[in-house]
Length: 102
Image (tube, rainbow, N blue to C red; front, side):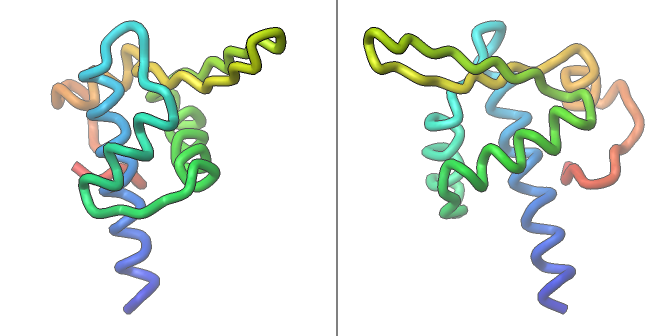
């Protein structure tokens, strides 16, 4: 039973990430922001776990990922943006996708 709950939780987390990226718009959402949003929703994930879920969504073609670094300033960000297929899925204009909770 716990495997089913674990799978369902991942699906909800992925849907939350996708919805947050849609709200963030064209600029995308930083993985640190996604982590904070998930925490507010009751999911305590470290940044690496957030990146794993983002990678899954990227493999499905629902988000794109851009790593931005400035070594001189010591800045490193991972921005996640929703893609056109991701928007279609959120808007209900695409079939259900296994692994994404709705």
